[in-house]
Image 1 (cartoon, rainbow, N blue to C red):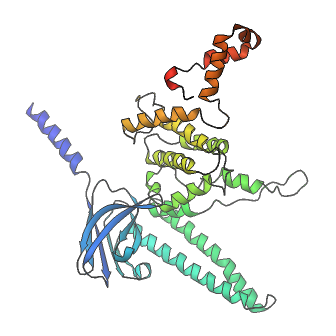
Image 2 (spheres, rainbow, N blue to C red; image 1 turned 135 degrees about the vertical axis):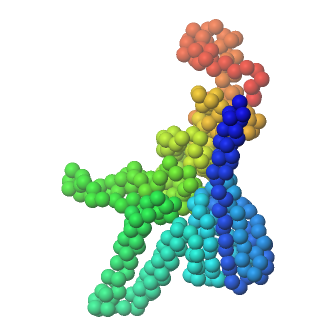
Image 3 (spheres, rainbow, N blue to C red; image 1 turned 90 degrees about the horizontal axis):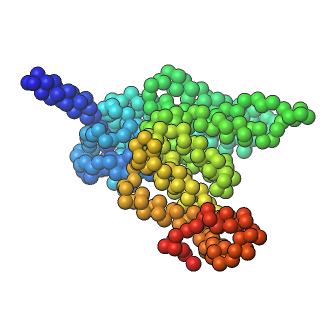
Length: 377
């Protein structure tokens, strides 16, 4: 019995001590003693994570177990901040105020060394591309100098792509590699011609839409903690990619959300995003997408657990939401209203002749009877 108790104690101690808190240290020259905030991305939004006092330009946080890997930011005075990567490793960064990224030195952190080198490379490439574009505007197209600068400008995109692919292939286990890969659009190959030997004007669009998510690991919950994932999600379900009507949105939303593990953060984020975006839409009829998303993912129970798929919501809020959603179903465009149904029911209850003439309406009446407490007319 004593051995058993000791074993249970040992297992408990091991489980509790398995997580080692990481130190996140930042040194920013040119900052007076002040309060700074550790913030985290969830989609495009920045949310509070922790607070600490910066003294002599140095501040240190202890990352607890609840701090999820992803893109974080250190928020200083005057609402100035810089992003960095957190992936359960200790971090030590040094930089100058008002010149965060260019002056940043990564003293400790494999992820951030890769991340900052990448950010600086992209920034330098963008600056050079802008310079070349401005120079080309001042030159004549048929001159040798124009051709040289044009070739250099066209080559910048290839250099950026090569850098990205090299980072991904040489650092496959890092979070940075997945974020960089996520930022890259799918390349569209040479597509077959139509029956007349011409390019199908819609083929590129259909290929791009079908392969849109190829560069994104949708099984990795860490990616929702990045503004890049939000941008990708917003673009796919927005007017750039899909016709903005409820049937089209739902045609893609249902299979997209159904592919996720229902307990994952990816499932929660995507379901919430599509549902809330539909609710806020000013397009007529888009409330149908909202109502059917709520019905399928919030008001339907998991057959195994017996609880709602929307496990992140409190029971009382779910009950309120689902009761309200049932009423909204009868107000959707193209849906028979409560008032109409009750009118039909009364006609058939009072007139046996009408039942004989219109038997199909009689069956509709019997199948859609609504208790009096639900009458809205």
